[in-house]
Amino acid sequence: MNAQRRSHVTLLALVSALALALCALLAPIRTRAQQKTDEAKPSATPAAAPAATPAATAPRPTGNDEEIIVNTDLINLTVTVTDQYGRYVSGLEKKAFSIFDGKEQQEITHFSDDDAPVSVGVIFDVSGSMSGDKIRRAREALSRFIDTSHDSDEYFLIAFNSRAQLVLDKTRDGKAVLDKLTYVETRSNTALYDATYLGVEKVQRGAHQKRALLVISDGQDNDSRYTFSEVRRLLKESDVVLYSIGILGGSDPGSSLGLEGQAILDELSSVSGGKAFFPNSAPEMDEIFEKIALELRHQYSIGYRPNNFTNDGKWHKIKVKVSPPRGLPKLFVRSREGYYAVTNPH
Image (cartoon, rainbow, N blue to C red; front, side, top):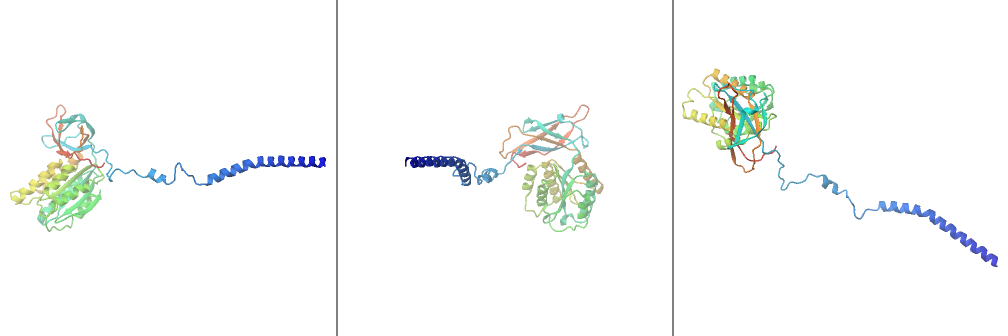
C-alpha cells in the first residue's frame, strides 16, 4: 500500500514538472502573439495621425487672402542721354550718373547700357479724323521704325476709333503688324485715352524688361471712357515710355483742335520719359520713326532702392543727372519724372 502511494506521488511530481516545462516553452510564443495583437489594435494616442499630413503641407494663409509681395521697392528707370545736337550718347559708365529721390542721392544698384530688345505697343489711330493722306503716311513711316528696331523686339498692335481693339498680340514679326494695317478703313470717333490705357496694360505683361508705346494719332480724343487724368496717372505709375507722333493735316497746326492735340500728346509723352513729335512732311516723319527706334536701342537701364522706402502712396520726384567725361560738352538726360510709393507684386 505504501509502495503504491509513493508511486502515485512520484507520478504527480513528474506530471507537474512536465507541465511547468510546457508552460515555459509556450510563454514566448504567447508574448509574441500578444505583441502582434497589440500592434493590430488602433492606438489611443497617435503621435502623428495621417489626417494631420495635409495640414502640414498645405500653403499657409496670409491673413485675409493678401498677396505675398517681394522686391517692391526697386525703382527701374529707362534713361536717354543726348548731346546738344540731339545725338544719342552711349558708352557712359555707371559712375557718370547720379540719381536723386527728392533731394537725397541714391545708390545705383542696377546699371546696363546693352542693346536690349523692347516690348513695343503700337497704338494706331483709325478714326475718321485720320482719313486720307494721314493714315497712309503713318503706315509708311511705321515700316521705317520696324526696319530699324531690334530683331527680337516684341510687338502689340492696338487699333482704335470709337473703341480700342487689340489687333495683334505678342509677335516678333514686324511685317505682320504692317500687314494688319494695309486695308484699314478710317471711321467713327477717337478713343485715344482708352487705347493708351489698354496699351500700357498689355506691354506691362510683355516678355522684355524694357517697354514702350508708340502712339500714332492726331491726339483729338472724343469718345473714351477713361479720362486724360486717369491715363496720365497710369503712365506715372508704370515704367512704360510713351512716344507720340502727331499726324497733323495742313490746317491742323494753327487750329485750336490741332494745338489741343499737340498739348495732349506732349504731356502724356513727357510724363513717361518719352517725347512727342509733330512732323511737317513725309520725309521728316520717316526720319522721326527711325530716330525713335534708334533711341530705344541706345538707352540706359538704371535701378535703385530708395533709402527708407515707405509704402505711403505718395509721389516721389526723381532727378537723374549725368556728368560728361572730360572732353565732352554738356549732356542732356530724359527719364520719367518720379513714382508713387506703392508696393507692387514682383
